Amino acid sequence: MATDLQIAARNVVSSNPATGEELRSFVCTPESEVRSAVARAVSAQPAWSERGIRKRLDILREFQRRLYQKKSEVAQLITREAGKPYVESLLTEVLVVLDAARFLIDNAFRLLRDEPVPHGNLAMKIKSGRLLREPYGVIGIVSPWNYPFSIPATEALSALVAGNAVVVKPSEYTSLSAIELASLLHAAGVPEEIFQVIPGDGATGAALASAAIDKLVFTGSVPTGKQIAQTAASRLLPVVLELGGKDPMLVLDDADVEVASSGAVWGAFVNAGQACLSVERCYVHRNLYQPFLDACVRKTLQLRVGNGLNPETDVGPMIHERQLQNVESQVEDAHSLGASVLAGGTRLPLIGPNFYAPTVLAGVTPSMRVMREETFGPVLPVMAIDNDEEAVRLANDSEYGLAASVWTRDRMRGETIARRLQAGTVMVNDAVSCFGISEAPHGGVKASGIGHSHGRWGLEEMVRIKYLDSDRLPGMDKVWWYNYGRAFTGQMEALLDMQFAARWTKRMNGAMKTLGALKPKRRL
Ligand code: NAD
Image (cartoon, rainbow, N blue to C red):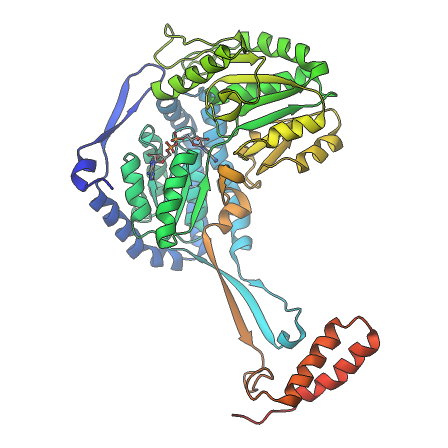
């Protein structure tokens, strides 16, 4: 663990990845200040919870109104800081958050209210049961740079509506987007201590994971997720882990080549391939392989790469040099092992510092790094397969399980294959866009994570379940209390017969004998 001095000595810098221009530098929040921020949140949270959900939803409506009004300004800021085309900032960041707010405004009251628990066990019918949903207290959120606004915002809105305080440690590359989120929430009426942003690097995130938070929602890479899980295990801190993916795209022999190739090109290159849900490997039936590849190459070569603020741009820069080097090394590895680079495969330094040409690879094999490791860049590796069985086997042969897509003209066939894929989400005839469906749970299986964000399941992550049991006959001793004995044991055997015996006669006999248990027993 880094000391305060080490953390305080470091800065994190937000830069425009398209130009390299420095936008703003932040001192990493020192560990002592991380602890103080959490302490302020702990003190303020009970009053926030007591305000009640209707008042919190009013604040959310105001947040939604303000975000809609500032939509262009916010989207431009995100594009300047994260590089993605302005229209993607509007759709995958601002719209996703406006719609997440809409979902909560429409549903949170109903989803969070007490829920009756009817009892099937005959002996327990005298009790009334209810589920209560109570806020955890303080939720820590550690987020990545690729959706720097919509990821912390969707998680934070659910947490806040449920009555929690939130402390966000944004990515070291995108502090400005998180600070914009804070300023919108505060202007809408969320108290400053109830939503705080602590800029910083990995050590700041580690300090937050070790502070007195009640739950941690982490989105990022698998290696960091594993470190967080270890920290959390030592104090049994509940965590949600939204981690990386290696999403397969399965193109069946009856797919529409024009539609599937357009889907592949968008799914692989949206946000310059830096989407957790992006198409990372493509398996195409051999009968369609060549026309599919030709269409992908033709469409890829038409993409306009450039600064995301230009409305004509399709693909923006990557976030930074290290990410670019990772992509480059996977493409070089595949090439050296026999893959063909049919489009791209090069940096584009004349456009700016972090640009990499959208790349289509053919002749890849399942053991290549580009087919196994998360690439997280604009690369579409395409491999021919002979049948559905092989497609399913290769798709599932991965440590990851975030999402997958199946492409076919026959929806039922697509859905049958979808059921066999090991993934948190499977889309039939589309990819990536499930992130924009506020009702849909988002989360992975295998190394892609634990738990969910978004929708009802994301909201459920923000509450503790308490079971409240209330006895309807408070003046009566319960039959199962002491005093045991031969007669009571016989009656209880009869109770089991009454409910579970195969023959009806035995059930009837059991019912008669059980009645004896209702006579008041001698008290101890
Ligand atoms: P990352 O793991 O490097 O960093 C994520 C966040 O964790 C950052 O804020 C970072 O500062 C912080 N961090 C780093 N070390 C830490 C530590 N030891 N303790 C606590 N916090 C620490 O990931 P990244 O490069 O920012 O994001 C890209 C990754 O995120 C990809 O793998 C991508 O697939 C994944 N991702 C997943 C989802 C999803 O919903 N499943 C969504 C977006 C991104």
